[in-house]
Structures are given as C-alpha cells and as structure tokens.
Length: 143
Image 1 (cartoon, one colour):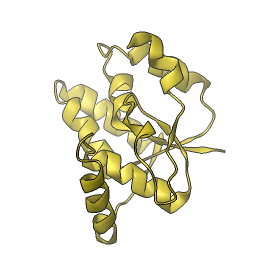
Image 2 (cartoon, one colour):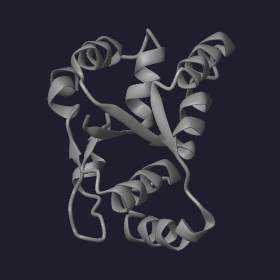
Image 3 (tube, helix red, strand yellow):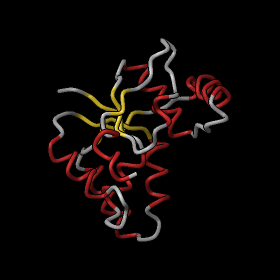
Image 4 (cartoon, helix red, strand yellow):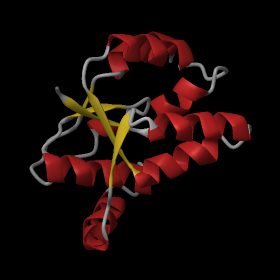
C-alpha cells in the first residue's frame, strides 16, 4: 500500500461541509488506495480551523482514533531542520505544519502529498525533490 502525506487543507475540507473543496476531497478519498500520513502540527492546525464547531472537531478526532491517518512524531532533533526550512521559505511563508511534512518526507522517502496549497511545488527536500501533490489536479477547477 502506497503511503501519502496529507496536509491540513484536505482534512479541513473533509470535515467542513461548507469548504469549497469538500466535495472534491470526498470524491478523491473515495477512490484513493493508500495510507495517509500526517504530523501533530497538521492535526493541531486542522482542529484550530474546525473550531467553529466542537462536534466537528470531535468527529475529526474520532476519525483519527479509528486510524484513518497515521500520525508521525516530529522530535526535538528535527527542530534544526524545521528552522532551516522556515528561514529558507520565509517569503512563501512555510508554517510549522508544512515544514513538519517536508521533514517526514525526508525521513521516510514519501514523495506524494495531498494538499490544497500550491506551495509544495516550491518546497524542496534535502535531496532537492519537490513533493508531488496528487490532489491538486482534482481541485484545479475550483480555484
């Protein structure tokens, strides 16, 4: 089973029925065959953005508890790389969730990501690879 990173945007869209990408994300995930991987900074961002409704936040957390997404840890030892990435991409800007996903890509070799943001074509791993946003072609018509 292929592993794919997932950013906050698609997760927010999945749980917010008013999000402009809600239908596209649901349609994509219905057809998706693979394992989703994210980080705690992404989870924090999602719950913050779903703060308009505590029941939606709980639904999201219940979904995570059912292991819909594997959550990987970022450790203190990764802070130097996160700071380096944040400085390098400060004009984009890159937030903690974004940098945590780049770090996980570097640690695991995972190259595919689901994101609503187009910034991932700019970001590069240590091996100078951009992450391949496999969701973007499915949502371009909604931009």
